[in-house]
Length: 358
Image 1 (tube, helix red, strand yellow):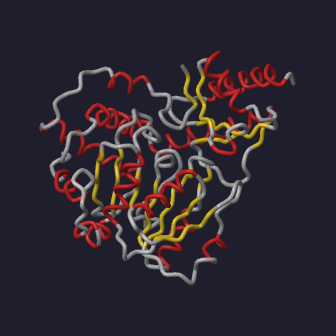
Image 2: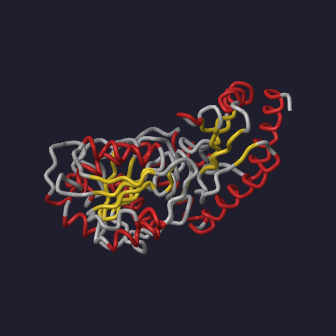
Image 3: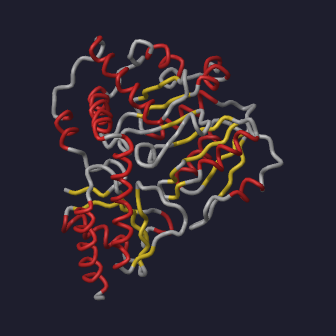
């Protein structure tokens, strides 16, 4: 099996070695030391601001998004949400569910987020700006400076879902004034699903979270912050995934953070160059290095996905909605190399020819 998917990803052997070990008991000093060590590296790589608080939720990324809404916002707020696809819409849905007043900047297919979108809402007051920095469903990488500048002008807190961008694209939490960074284990960390780390700036924690008494036991950030002073969580964590996280972060440190990002960048660029040989196109907006959407000239995407899976044991990401017959997404993270790109593109050539006769 070969995964060219954005999560779960193709895992490195060193991660699989950890995964195959007995899961230890976790209410120990040894496990606490592992978690505190992971937290040190995680905050280092995202350049978290001084005093930032960490929450390690055993949940999917969506759990992290919802917990952030619940702990940081209330009905007196007004949030600006960038809705450029499936995951931007998820933030909209969560705001509606939890009664958070909000305005959405809705992007259409192939529409890039630009400064004029913010001009259109410049006359409104906002307390939060919320975005998926890489809208995974389209692979658009938003300009963090546009988001950061607008949040600063409005004196608003900046909440970033970096699930499919952190440890893939450059990311600077402190430098860009980001108040919340949400990630998920199966994307940039390239480990198993099940863990959603969230890092909250000290100013947002003190201003909002600390005194926002939510009606929820499991998702109460204050309980996580209190317990993490000793490297623990209030409830049973995904212990095995936590150990994988520690190994993954040390592998990045050994390679060098900048070298790690450069390697992913080179794999992404190589793939995008190679597919010029195929009857497909890519979006014109700025893409994350996580994934490349490829649009077929004919409605064969579902057929290509099925043949890759059933005949070659290759997995790429399908796309739902109106693009499901035309678009597939190919990821460049995990244990993926330029040689893997060559193999995939050669296979795609053969599959497309078999399906279309061209």
